[in-house]
Length: 328
Ligand code: GLV
Ligand code: GLV
Image (cartoon, rainbow, N blue to C red; front, side, top):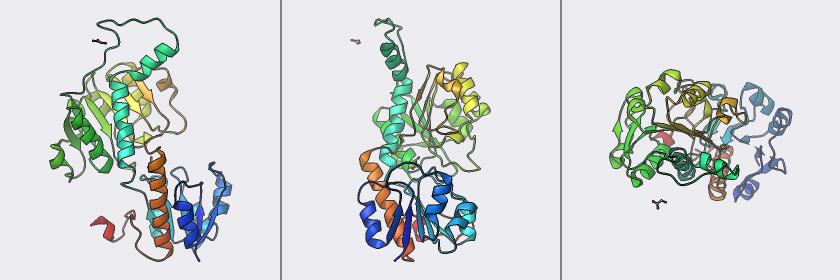
């Protein structure tokens, strides 16, 4: 029987699935393991089921030992995992794409609405018991109908945000390294990133964090955006240069932002906290009861397949590796 290390309590059917397939070593509570406990937990296991905050690097792989066959991350993102280190050791890495696309797109579109219609600012005004009255010019935002929604990365999540944008009467454009298979169905035009930023009324980011996308949106890129435009980030904080974003929002070179992710989570840039024109939520993209259960179950299926020496449902392509069935 294989042994699974599970670094946080999982919801739904995942615990019983893993228990039926092997021995489960997990902490009883859902608290975050500190590093020493994490390293002790993975020692000698076949598969580690990890959270997006667990750093999987040579140190952790050494602690696990030569019996480790796989790392099953309970997240679509895998920037917490050193893929090259896993590839060198022949360790399979899996993630949880697909099952969180709708929940994350809902949250992203919630941020689009909250930022363009100033919902956070309005809520604060009422809760602070500040005086207000309806007025023709009071707290105006911007229409979505007829506006251009610029999606950076038209994949599973980005395409679902685009679909929501269509329902609100938005025109869809996207930027990405490849033509997206979703584009035709959405009537989405592909632009280069600079043109997308210069012409979009709302920009929503849906690229994974990697060396290529770190600070993809920096001072220069923010400078291309319209002063009436809104930026939404539900991807990873470091895709945006947070300090440059604070400047752009403070100087109103862009109108607003909605952020679910931050460069140094759970820290939030103090400059953001002082601004009215940014909506801030604590990394809630996939945070629904149903979606978290689905993520945990997919991660369990991945872990069980890897432990059995089978092709897992959703492998991550490792550097230098041959394409697997999942890529085709
Ligand atoms: C959440 O941020 C995820 O990557 O699943
Ligand atoms: C707004 O509340 C309106 O009635 O137009």
